[in-house]
Length: 130
Length: 414
Picture 1 (tube, rainbow over the protein chains, first blue to last red):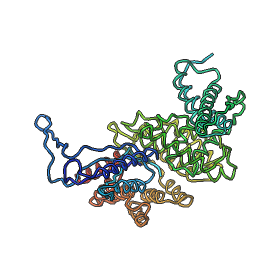
Picture 2: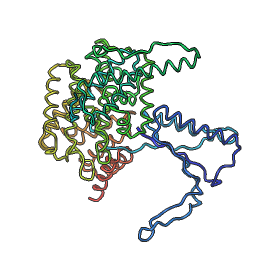
Picture 3: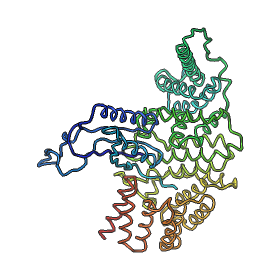
Picture 4: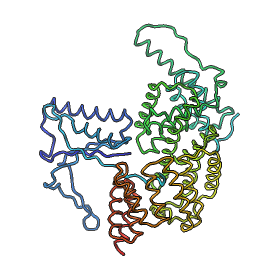
């Protein structure tokens, strides 16, 4: 079963967070370690981090299909910061990985407790049998 | 002297894989490294044979290449230890034994099957191990089949081997008692491989390795090695009788076509006949089980030339038996469908109520889809629409979701 784990960040600040050097390093090391762990457990399908929200553009089809781009809208409270796609044996395992990611260290080494949205990935048709 | 590579060569190579692995693992007493070495020999064969031809003694060729690789592994292991202990010693390097071929055991494939489908492994690890060690598939092929990166699949296999090592399973055929105890796990793994293949055999995924065919091949092999077991034959029958409908179960736009709407002329008659033959022999052995009964249900469907010819009373009787032999919420659900077809949809809906309190199935999309269908049959369109939509929001299959949403939309426009 494949799941996507979507890590959301608050929009506040728009850009790179102004954390202490030590805290930033701890956070980066944690994320690299988590990816490494998932690779070694044979569960990682992919993991990507996204650029900061200030790099985002909203695109719509304009007249004649010409892309019409716009800056991001200020009313969005949360932004997707990155995601993992994992292939695991149970939903519980996907939740456990998400909880671990959620506890990534932030300022002062305290767990960030970020909300991680976990959703099953759609697949092909189900078997006809039991 | 070599023979030209043809369609039978790949089949031969895959059949040889577990036999060669058995011989090498026994001789070098290291299953994990032997498995890696045989994998490399297989990759070498897949690269060289199509161009240079199939060697006169393909088994000997594979053993030689795998043994050479084992020797390299032993050498580098010794070198590593020497570096670690900084003691330089002359060590006799193990050379590939000349008589290794006489070490072959006809039961090797079976030994490996029991080893790879060991209950200590998670099902995803057992599936990967079985496909590689018994099926002779490469890590790349297995990774592609499951749409995961190759590195991830390689890790899964290496961890599976670690679990096998930790669990201390010896490389020998389990006793008759152990075999009986562990056979359900083996059959379950084969069944899961088939399901994965059957579920993914649509459209965009067509270029993926045909796991359903691979599962059928492995189950045929298991049946040949365990000729007396009725459930192995039952599982093979079930796979054949299900696979026979493959061409009819999706439409030109990859849309799902339910059993009652399929063009039955597209069903594979040869697979159906073979499935029924295996099933008939299995049932005559007298120890009826889960797979034989499911195969029997599939056979009743396959034998009906038109949907309306389906012998539902017989299917109902089979599900009643299944409820006793192997009770599960899915069996209850299928039993309710059969009861609805025999005694009317109201009876089916009544039976579904018992499942609403069963945590294993309550709220499951399939329960809601069946309920929607039965509500439509009794003429309660509004409730049917509601439940089709609930089911559509809960399934994790896109073709199924499209099907369920279309059902709701069709009813809403009536």
